Image (cartoon, rainbow, N blue to C red):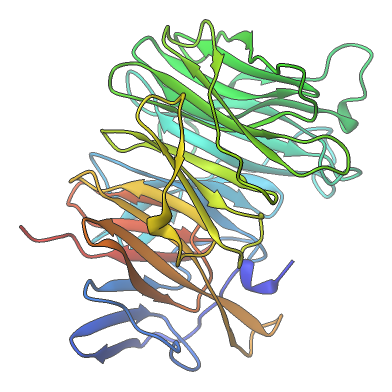
Length: 403
């Protein structure tokens, strides 16, 4: 793993502004050389160390959600434990609201790792989040649980757990949902129970019922994401792969709230495509990721009006693998990716990955530079129209569009 995908640490208190032809990139707390590129027509403000952590190695939010009363809430990890932050002030800073750390998992806090995979606003206020527990003796084995919180340090509790069945080794299994969305009737989560792809349905976020996703004879099936359309239609997306064969993209569609699912039709994409992101932009479903799973590989974007029939969006041909995306108030997309470049740094590891944002518009996908402080993992639109993005402890803020 590249160090550039880890934490970027700044120590100075000065603010650096770089302007080229009216484009501005503002960095708070920046050190060292300025980025090789600057922003496009819209200004991005980049704040290093915006999220306080005790453990700077891979600490900070992995998911951001806009908060209608405050700025945003961040969900992620600090060291080996789950952690939470809320935006403060003008949304350029955050304060940690992590509960007091307690032993988790198998009560070996020095060995296992915990983090947040997905989060949504909960009915009645607060949030639901999926926490992932990864076992130290297996790089891939995990189980997950559902947390409910109100954004305060003591307001988080585990409301559901997904564990290996009796007779299965819990530290060699892959069990539980990994993505979550709200529906008209409650919530739907998707994931797997080892070789079995599943959706889980819940009215209250506490009691969950598992529903099989049809595998149609495929093996190695995994589910990455789920999204809901305004009409209530649900779509899930994932992959399947036989040993020594390429990945194949799979989609599932439900028109009845997740109670039953049908498979969709995906064109032959070749290679090893991976689409970990799925959203609905108000008109269509959009799946985003990469053609081969390489951070610097080509982007892959598929669109579908109904979730059953998909086509490739060639407008994203110049982008690299999409790591995060959101829908802007006008229905346009904003996505982020690596630029394929890196910048030398005096920090441990030697380099930082450079990133770009991609704004979809009637004129195509327009590139906006983010500098070389890592590639964001989550984007959210704030109540004032700005966009917040995060890469570990670094916060990116995009100015709101003016009418």
